[in-house]
Length: 234
Image (cartoon, rainbow, N blue to C red; front, side, top):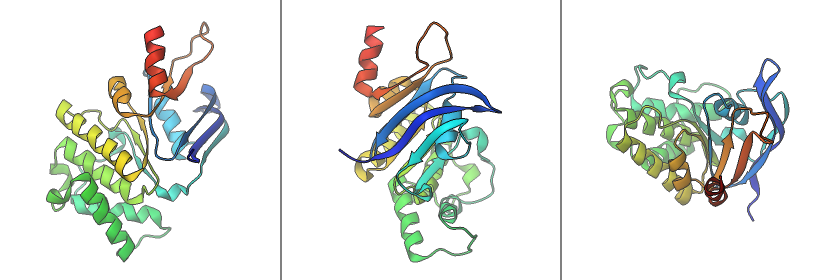
């Protein structure tokens, strides 16, 4: 059995001391593919921000058994400036800067090799010289994934990465993530509204629910096979 890459223990998340979700406990092994699903307002993005370290939990712990500098992050589209006047190459290369403490106007050999690797794995080499804002939605997401992969030696965290993409671009992005997960053994942690896509591609599902006094739990965590069987029994 692989060592857990992520462990959440007695986790309570929310804002300004007001909880959204309480007593969340789960862990995933290195190389897993976790999809976080659920209704709007259930706390998916808040949980993801807490996992990624962008927001502190009210109580409880989130622990990665790898260095956080080796975890890539792709935020929601609303948090990204798609009109940024830079080339795809510049956007991707900037991912190496997050691995160091200070800004540097150059990249060492290891970083250059990692950037080239990320470009190859995401299939963006043919449009590296193009301005980011002139690319299609699917191409832009590939560029941002490549940027995250420059850092992501162990895991990549994504917040609704296919929102706004057309069906074909969504399909291609899912296939790309699955290939990276399977071939490179990089752990995927992703928030998505696409439950069918989660069933098809993920190894684990964490489903969050809006609070209901009549239900004992406001989340489910388990293998995809258990999640599908649970849906059949409802």
